[in-house]
Length: 273
Image 1 (tube, rainbow, N blue to C red):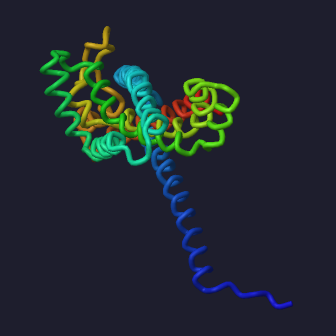
Image 2: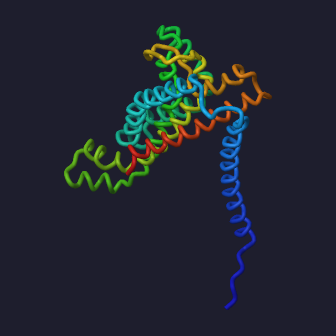
Image 3: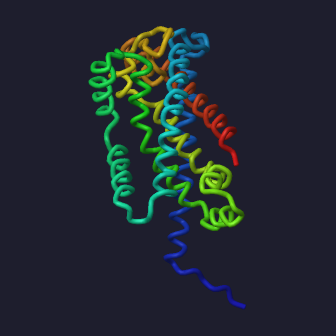
């Protein structure tokens, strides 16, 4: 029995898909390898560790992450529930909300920073503070939470809702006992994207949280985050071309990777199916 030859287009498509996957794997490995190798520059003559300013920035970053999520998760998930569970298809109000979220998602973060400086820092007199930075970042990540949560709720089978209601459960009970647990993995993806935005943001926080190198005693105190610390290394350590700058910058980048990994594991623990 002769073996049927695959069409040339099919073989070409499979090759292109394999190359794309291998290319993505190579880029990820190359980036991680550069971070690890860069963190070892000057390692023989320089103690492996971080200065006080990095640990302060790490604490500020963690505080901002948890504060932003505490502010945005109820609002974002609640908005997604309203759009999916309480609005009919073709609703003008739902369409207007979705358009607003798409518009907010496309605004550059530096514009959020300018707004935060004018409104939170100046008008509300919060000054450069962790609270002002968190409120600004909450606006940045709100579209991410709403859009991913809405998609997660829409992917929950209708049969699950109908089955719960047929057993006599109310709409709210079905939502919290069946729909929300089923959509938790999709909501988790939005949380992880939001955490990445918060941890890696620089421009918006320079305008709102400030660059003070100190441990804030309250949310109204200024404090730099890890991303801002990474940005400031270019001026504090002499800029590109000096070994100390490269070493400290790459080691801080490695800390970024570890931090994101730990936050992902934590989020998966609380949002697991």
